[in-house]
Amino acid sequence: RRGRRFCSTAATSRLVSKIGRPTSALSTERSLDFLRAKGLDAEDLLLVSTLVKTNAGVESIDVSGNGFGAGGAESLVAIVRSLPQLSKLDASQNNLRASAALLAEAAASHGSLRSLAMSANAIGASACTAIGEALAAAA
Image (cartoon, rainbow, N blue to C red; front, side, top):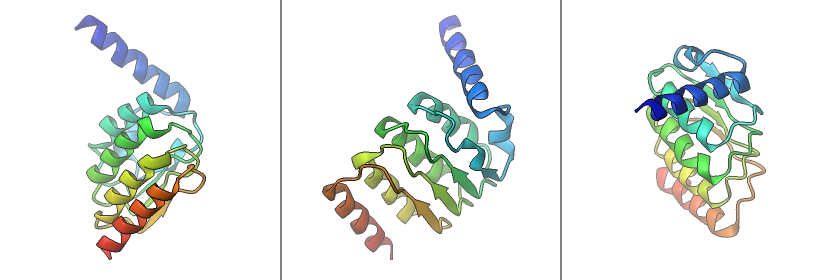
């Protein structure tokens, strides 16, 4: 237990130093665009997803330019699913690759999301097809 608490405290401190704000901002602010280009990795995004679940008022998130890769995509999907008022998400430049299809599926079934940016993510042909199918199914 002590090790788990230490890891949690260390991860939280690391996240605070990267985003330059207290973690309480993730639970209170409507716009989380301050997450853009902060060097967030998959572990950071997992912590963000845990903290942001208590903030149902989030309308905009910009996590572009972090390069967290496919490992962070699952956390990003959890974030989208937990925020009913989310209307804008920028996940560009994160090296999502095929996992971009998972994000598109979550976005397609989201009731409020109106803008999803996923440029520069090295998305291959099969992921593009899956994204198109997810969006067509939601239309």
